[in-house]
Image 1: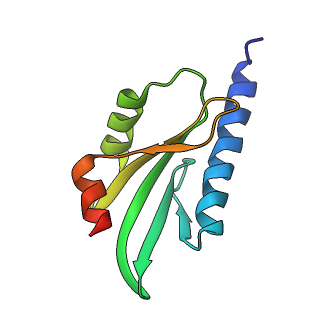
Image 2: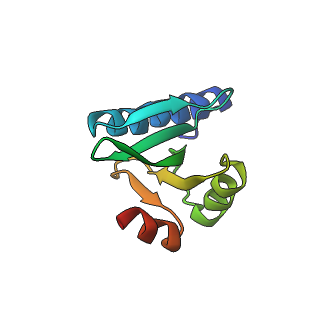
Image 3: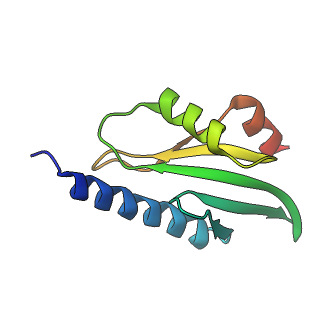
Length: 107
């Protein structure tokens, strides 16, 4: 059964809330971005500011990771790392980001 436009939007909003809650449970500070469901996640280490993640959440059945990654990279505020969190039904959440930025986060 296919979802209606409202059903797709509701599914997307639920997905955004799931991702936000996962970061909150992980102890991260979240900031909503005005007029969008995207979030900025504040990453700190030893109490000091480390970086900001621009998190684009996608709760869709058809995975279009390259398209979503390009969207997140184009929409991110300056000096943030673009991250796409995504999952289809009955699957765990996964994330995607540029390899160079992932390596920088691990340093």
